[in-house]
Length: 421
Image (cartoon, rainbow, N blue to C red):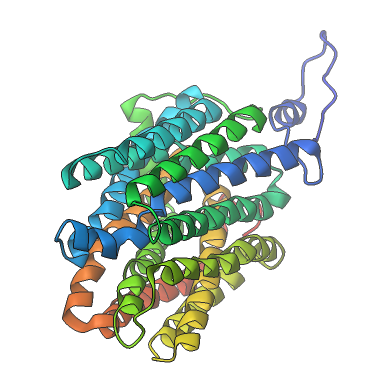
């Protein structure tokens, strides 16, 4: 931890000393750093496990409730949609009452709602509980990036953010993997209870070990203050591009994993559901890339790294368009590697680019991120019905071309409010 020597009581504190006292950062290699990244790792794990555990169930739910692929995708889209809306509320609330209380409450509520969803007697009841899960998870998703940008030393934010997103990747992989395998042997209701129980454990660990905020300063919830922050962010040349980047990247990622199961269960593959669930191990590439590329961006600059990770996603998508299964799986691996690397770079860029109201800036980024997953994830169903995997490829490819053009535009912008970009 970086410390400062306080001035004597009778002396006036120079401005630079006051600034030093207010900014006591967590340094890499300290116990506090390890506790922070482990706690946020657990939080990211729980968030993504709860959010995406339903993805492998979509073909099964289509059969059980006699609904098509686009309708089945609502079990994910209503959660991500409500999460996106909740971000606009929980981010500013955390600016007022603090980061940790909001995140802890969010995790426990989401875990309990997941267990309740397993007991719903109707499809409509399941969707209502999924909406509440998304709303609850907004409390962690909106605040985690802001907490890291406030508490971690600026030189190590990329690494810390990458480790947090690595937790997201493991959570997304584990949620899909556990339910994807379990539903071949037990009911999807039981699988949801298992995921909810694991999330409760992760929430408890998070609550116990996450250090209290030391650099948090309460901000007014007055509508005028919120409007001023909103206006400031959208006047910046770079932040709106990062918000749109989040929308298209997440939209592309969710669409691929929403419908790859339908493809692999059908001809010519006719794969077992358990094996399709096991393909979630491709998330391991995202676990590695989020931390590695986040650290690389700290050294080389985000402008040089973001566009290259999007190019990797395009290459991975192209490989999935071929028929041989090894190429499809390798394409999924490359696509996932690129996505988590791109998200790690873009999300850490928000905290460096925003001058004030960082919580609100993170909330806007994540609002676009999850709105993209919700809107594009369901829209992809129509492309699936119209053109199968070729239709999906065309849709995702279009999103990624937009993402690449925005990344190249970001690379040309001068720094504003950043320590290092």
